[in-house]
Image 1 (tube, rainbow, N blue to C red):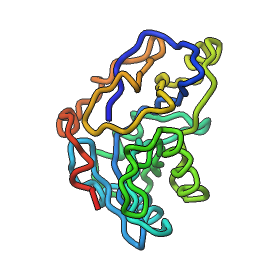
Image 2 (image 1 turned 90 degrees about the vertical axis):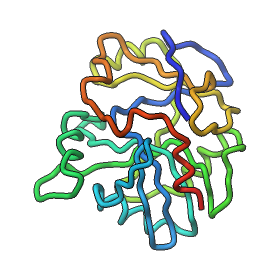
Image 3 (image 1 turned 90 degrees about the horizontal axis):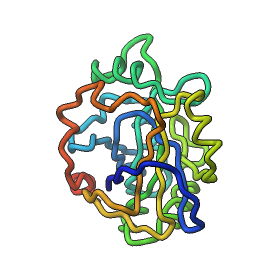
Image 4 (image 1 turned 45 degrees about the vertical axis):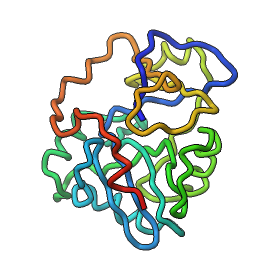
Length: 210
């Protein structure tokens, strides 16, 4: 599921806001001692991030399918795209490399059951219970919609925010108006790093469906 562009933050009680992490979109199927990671285009990237696959394989139950962003986080919790790019181009772990974190924001399958038709807030609540205290995985939580917070994102080097309708269902491969991406002013355009294999928008859950 993809977000439509939007110009600015707005206030609405039936929407939530999430920090927009600047990383590589990744789908994870995990649980029961195994884990598999795929890029947005469907490329198997399991071997690229062994610290993630090890952590995710320890999830109880399963299989679960988690949508998130693979990031290298800096010392204040922001995503560092240059360090991530340097790590990812090796397509493997190497001595001295930056560790990656999965910034998880949605749960599509829980214990083998398709929950994409549940409201966003219910999916996020189930995701929160699933990934709590899992190493190398953080939950992308919702934030209050305040203009001052958005202006402060410049100093915090955040890429921007995502606005999501609380009752929205998950629609694979759809660029939906229920999800909006709001980039901060002055942010660098995403084409700064070319990722040819990830530029195609596919129903990327198909390859991971239990």
